[in-house]
Length: 447
Ligand SMILES: CC(C)(COP(=O)(O)OP(=O)(O)OC[C@H]1O[C@@H](n2cnc3c(N)ncnc32)[C@H](O)[C@@H]1OP(=O)(O)O)[C@@H](O)C(=O)NCCC(=O)NCCS
Image (cartoon, rainbow, N blue to C red; front, side, top):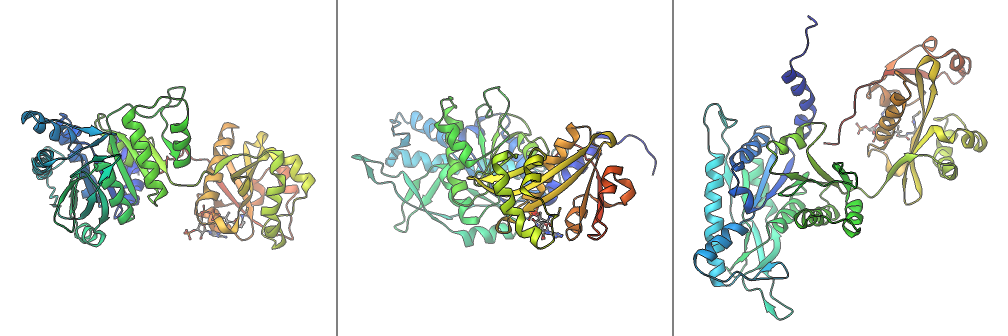
């Protein structure tokens, strides 16, 4: 193979490939407000959504219609009534809801039916279906206010939705639902999206927002936070724009009900959806449902917890024995994952600065918490720490975990490749295998 520089598109394509593979056959629910349909970038947004569909993502689109409903009410000289942020949908408002939702539906279907050459839609056939998938019930009378045809989601026809998704159709859900009594109710698009995502056990729920992305005190975009952290942020003193706060609250609700990943993406940024889903950097905020676990450098107080974690593995001969004194002396070499004061996992990095190599050691995850990617997170964290120390190669000595390391880029190595001081300490009786990994480039943001 000739060594010519790689074209940027090829590099981009290679970087995107893991995400394309990870998202294929996954179910995403995407929600956007009716405001999106009024913006010039709406066609481009829908065409990006169509690209997801062609890459094998199963999609449910949920749209709002608030500005379209209000426009119709104003044209009829009708009153627009909200109490506690909820519309009172009387007969006249219900007519506006039906009109607006119907007309938005055909506009969306038309944009998804485009097939012009020189557009992303060339050669694409997107089949869209919609129907009576959402059963609703009236919100009823609250604090003496009768909300009439404003409703809430009662259930979602999961089986019906799945059937359409499995046959390759995109499903479009309006902010409306039907009751067994044959009535029509106006629903919040966000509630419909959450209910659909929970019912389908969707892999992702994506909200498009109209406001600036979420930033910390230093104005650095917050790209990833847990539902618990989002809650703390909402309760804190910082002012968060209303719409963003509403999305965060919806994200927390969805995460608490089993949706593991909720993305909030700025829809005014052209291509932000594709950036968020198919690039390392992303372009939005990901809220995850994990319980709040902290990966951090170990402190002296962690010695007891680490010993508890590694003692059974030492007894089995999987890890080399470490005394409490030794661990206390070496504690700053360790990183841990802690949840509510319990040490769930640990790993250590022993640097050999002169040789620019480092040893990754004592990688251990509590038996109840294995298979959750924690060891990998620790290894990546220590790799970053190693790179900061100028280390260019990592090695491990292991007796039973060879494949775990091989699957993460470590190659079999020889004793003589280790620093002399480490060679002298090699335990021939233990006969550990040696694996070495050159340190890779920057790490990926979670998909
Ligand atoms: C190895 C260990 C650290 C992995 O922790 P983890 O948090 O479950 O790891 P991850 O979630 O990142 O990876 C899980 C994957 O590793 C695999 N794996 C676990 N132990 C393995 C082993 N001994 N050999 C090969 N693969 C192994 C799992 O099968 C799983 O892969 P799969 O999903 O394809 O089945 C954990 O099993 C452990 O603590 N083992 C005992 C201690 C040990 O062996 N330490 C390494 C010596 S330094």
